[in-house]
Image (cartoon, rainbow over all chains, first blue to last red; front, top):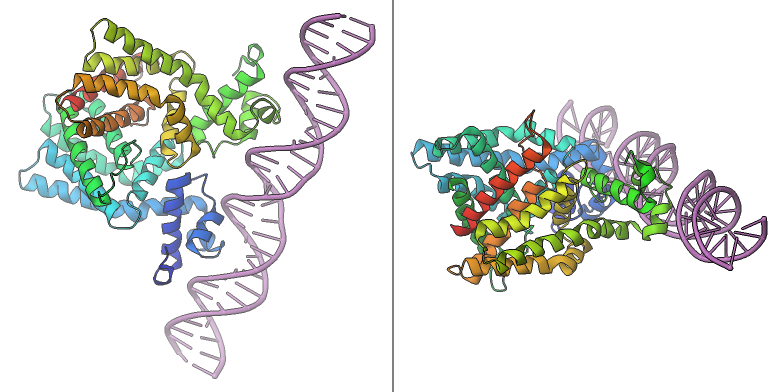
Length: 206
Length: 206
DNA sequence: CGGCGTTTCAAACAATCGTTTGAAGTCTAG
DNA sequence: CTAGACTTCAAACGATTGTTTGAAACGCCG
């Protein structure tokens, strides 16, 4: 955000909104705080996005379109090569999120926003996410169903539900584990991904 | 809340605040909405609690004091009897939360509020919870350390961090699994607890 | 019944909320 | 160079926010 000059007003708003939504929640972050952080005029939000609700959806769209594409791409590559296993399919789900977290300053900002959305239990947000990105989870669920044929449908759905919870929570860095001094953000999150895959694969397989 | 006559103003406010915080978040639920739902005067919040922040803390205190007591009581009973295992220790952590979810109309309301607190990443709330209830997690961590001596400290903390995430997320009912028709809330949540223990134990043991 | 601490109440406080307005500024095409 | 579309701006809109006030109502004890 300090290099605001090279970003369009739209991009500056999206970046500042993402950070403030992660930190204070959707209701907790005001448009005045967002536009002040983005160093743009207050009215720019309604000019470029129409409303705060539309801004929120756009914050998701900007990241989730590519994240979903990469996840499904990896999954397809895996299955085409016959390499699908619990570990590799989990990796196909997690690694794109990991890369997203690392390709910009501030680390896991967007994953925290995404986890906030799960907490918004009754909101239009759940509907928006489910309508636009639900097919990703559906495809992965189908892959897991093939890898775990001994589980009946109900048992599988319970485990996937719990697994998604563990992934969401961990990728949002909600836990207590702090990055150790001398450890880079990248190393920290790669460690997390490794443990996450190991833990979740065991839970699914159990 | 419909039987407001038999509850004190304090209790009516706490109950309404809990439900609205679960539904709309701490910033999203206003004191006017809370007092309207509780059918008390707006000024009653500041009279009885001093401020909105104090009200939020009190919503946690009311449930967490007894929840923490019950969890540690079960853990102590287990260890005194020499019955401590991954499954029983996880059960000692989960069952009190399950009972709390079931002892009042509306089910998992408070667990959803608790999960919201985890999403409030930078807030005073994390400090408040850690300062006042961190010892519970510490005691359980020690129990798991005894049950998993093959894991070094770092490995154990990673797995516990992920396990807490899975438990928090699932108990808050953030997942996609809906209660099936013909299945009572109690049956649904007992199913969830069963799967949760099985999944998490496998992840810890892996 | 009278008096006193506790609780409730309607009303108002300044501050902040999302959104709208119309003019000023910027940019590009003709 | 100018016309016209696009973008930014300061200012203000009514609504809503958390909090405070002082008086009214209540409940209990002497």
